[in-house]
Figure 1 (tube, helix red, strand yellow):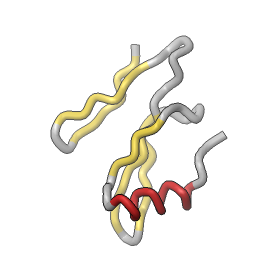
Figure 2 (cartoon, rainbow, N blue to C red; figure 1 turned 120 degrees about the horizontal axis):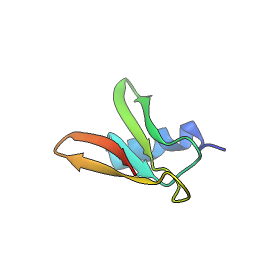
Figure 3 (tube, rainbow, N blue to C red; figure 1 turned 90 degrees about the vertical axis):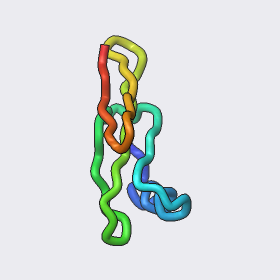
Figure 4 (cartoon, one colour; figure 1 turned 180 degrees about the vertical axis):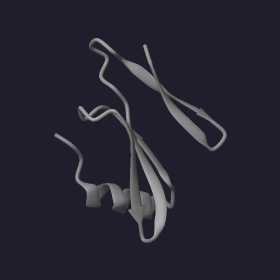
Length: 67
């Protein structure tokens, strides 16, 4: 299961942000999304069973760290 793409766009639009981070939907990683011509990203965190991880953000850069 995954999130509703239009709901993601609306949240990014409403809050005027370009990055959304949320809990796992069985699709961990970075998902690029266009919002009104603006490049945005949705980061999905992995589950905690087995190969968990976290998102490390430094300045404008983010990457998924797995353990």
